[in-house]
Length: 239
Ligand code: FPP
Figure: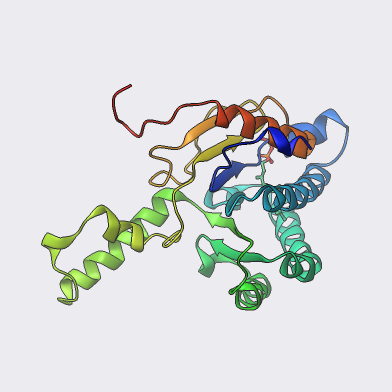
C-alpha cells in the first residue's frame, strides 16, 4: 500500500459495506457467498485501518431493516457474524483492536449476544483501534432510544430539561464517547445514508465508491483516504 503519500489520517472512518448480493449474482454465487467474501474484506480493512493509524472504524454489518430479509439470508448473516467473532477474536485482540457493538442488542440471538459481551470485555482496554460493529443498528431507533433515556431522567428529576444540549444527546447515543466520523465510505455506487449514524455524520465527508464491497481492496481504501486528504473541511465556516 502507498501509505507514504498519506499526510492527513482521518481519526474515524465509517463504512457502508454495500453490494455483496449484486457481486454474488455477477459471479453466479449465492447471496451468502457474497456476504462471506464481504466478511473477509471487512477483516482486511480492519487490519489496513489499524496499520494506517485510524483510531476508530465503524462498519455497518447488519441494519435493523435487514431482519426483514429472507430468513435464510438472515440466519446465514448471523452465522457469519458468529463465525467472525469466534474465529477472529484472538487475532483482533493481539492486534490491539477494541471491539464494540452498536445497535439493538436485545434483538440479537443469545449466542451472538454472549459472544459480543465476551469480546467487548476481553478487548475493552485495547488502544490501537476501536472497531464499532453496527449490528441490528438503525440510526433513528438510536436517536429515539437516546431521547427516551433523557426523558426518563428529566421525569425522575435526574436531569434539568433546560440543560439538554447537543453534548447531552451525544452521551446517550450508542456511540457515546466516540468522536464523529471524519469520513464515510459507501461501496456499490449507491448514494444514500440508509439510516446510518444520522446524527454523527453532520459534518462528515462522504465518498461513494463504484465497486461492490467484495471487490474493495486495501488499495481502494487508501485511494479513498487520499481523496479525503485533498478535501477541505470547513464545518460550516466561511471559505
Ligand atoms: C450489503 O450488501 C451488506 C450487508 C447487508 C451486510 C454486510 C455484511 C458483511 C460484509 C458480512 C458480515 C460482516 C462481518 C464483519 C462478519 P447487500 O446484501 O445489501 O448487497 P446488494 O445491495 O447488492 O443486494
